[in-house]
Length: 69
Image: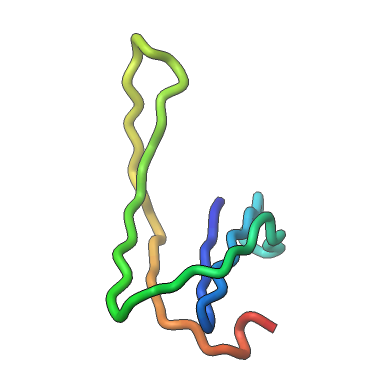
């Protein structure tokens, strides 16, 4: 699972296998405007086969700065 959060121009990406323990894997300073667009994708690892996915339990919420500490 992948989780992304952004607070005060700092975006952090996390990975988790269980959704209980999130491990930060990357962090970058990003100048974000007022509106942020989010997308989900799936990738096929074969050039001759397509992939299909159903996303469930997807949420977007505004983070409290204390969430990142």
